[in-house]
Length: 242
Image 1 (cartoon, rainbow, N blue to C red):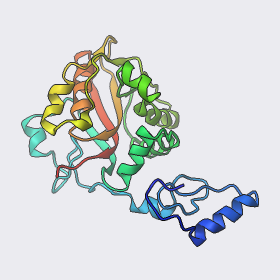
Image 2 (cartoon, one colour; image 1 turned 60 degrees about the vertical axis):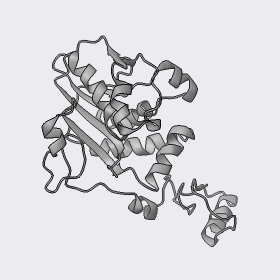
Image 3 (tube, helix red, strand yellow; image 1 turned 90 degrees about the vertical axis):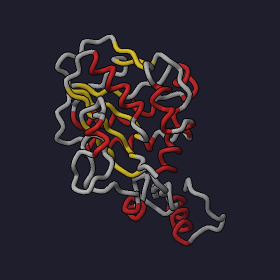
């Protein structure tokens, strides 16, 4: 079933998909448009329509720059992570998919986006994957950590270890999405704790959306304080300043 609003009339292509299922042919409806997508969550047409990031972007924060150079903001105040990669721009309809995964418990989307991120991470040198941790209270409420679900396919494809216990979220901060951009840095300060010795380790830090980057930056700062030599932030989507 599509996760987007639509009228209740059964489109011809959906009627055909229904007939096929009645006949024992197992196919799947695209989560966005509802048409038959065969054996994947999205049909090829909807995959092609997902909002792309510009190819030329800052290597430190993944925001667009004219020639792919480091942006002025990162030159003035470099982030704690050494690199940032994102698969998409956080815009319609990708935002609806991420929200459906995160708040609608469509965990299959975690596997889908995890495979996308695994491709994006090809060629990186990684010693350990760290899913951005949730506070235990938030984890109990949600029932899963979306970053962990994204990290599993990456680890499987590249045979990189995941350590979800390496870094913990020790302070139950208000959701970042509810705050103004300028409030997010203060909100997340001191929220993470790490006890491991990461001396010389190359860490891949995974999350679903990089908005201001405050959460990823603070977690990377914590990892660096414990010896991490290089931290790459990897997200499904990057929000662009409006």
